[in-house]
Length: 107
Picture (cartoon, rainbow, N blue to C red):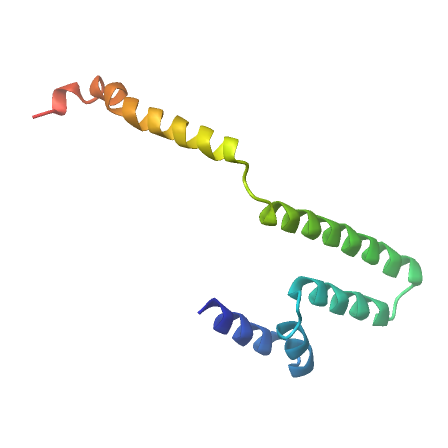
């Protein structure tokens, strides 16, 4: 369902050629960044401004790559076990902590 909404959104906002190029790309974010870079190069402005914009685009691309590395790396087993133990202990002790504030409202 998300894919259909994504395709509809792309077709409504971009030209058909651009939308199809991004939709059919193997890595959509890189294709979109490439299209942005091409659009920046075509802007009728001084090359110093273009370089400043491209610098920001490169920073964005680096951040995107870092985010994808974090998303694709597995969570270490130690962290998931520690989290499970903490949540189990917290849920086990929660009724004891809630007894005093709700003492007068028990049946």
